[in-house]
Amino acid sequence: MNPLVIAPSILSADFAKLGEEVRAITEAGADWIHVDVMDGHFVPNITIGPAIVAALRPHTHLPFDVHLMIAPCDPYLEAFAQAGADLIAVHVEAGPHLHRSLQAIRALGKKAGVVLNPASPASSVKHVLDLLDLVLVMSVNPGFGGQAFIPSAVEKIAELKAMIGDRPIRIEVDGGVNPETAALVAAAGADTLVAGSAVFKGGPGQYAANIAAIRASA
Ligand code: DX5
Ligand code: ZN
Image (cartoon, rainbow, N blue to C red; front, side):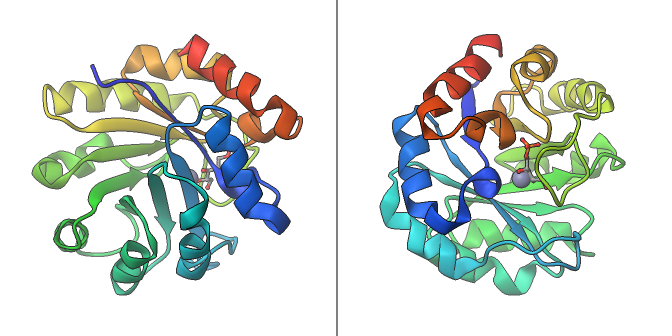
């Protein structure tokens, strides 16, 4: 069993002071920093690019877990690697050559992840397991924070857990994760939890308690 990782999503942070926010969640007990990159094409929202990832890099020693919601993704992998990403995850739906994208991420010396939208089957990753460090199961439709958890993610996590077996591949969940849903997904086999609104609610004084509450119930 992999040790539990809590990865706050800075999508729910105050964008006017992202550096401070990243320092605050680092001090509050986060394990990774989850960075949501959206292009206004693959998903109906636009967020941040490699320049902001690079600007945030000096503000924490924690790994940057970069979730690319962009299509095509291949032309931008190197830029995010150079900006300071430690893990780069691409959507299985974002391009025609998933295997090539994962090879490219590994060739850049970064950990590689695949993301599955709520309607995408667990079987999409079956033939790329040897290139994977992480599978990210979306438990909302990507694009926005603060949405309700989609329960069918739990069954998909269990299916992935069985498929992965004893391989060193993490199962991450993203969307609507809070202390209640964290218990469900952890029981099914998830070991890496992304949370945006559940971490950032209440402001910086609450971050440590919010992270601890998710960790305690997972
Ligand atoms: C959605 C993003 C998530 C989002 C999660 O497209 O990938 O990382 O920030 O936010 P919450 O935890 O509020 O659902
Ligand atoms: Zn995300």
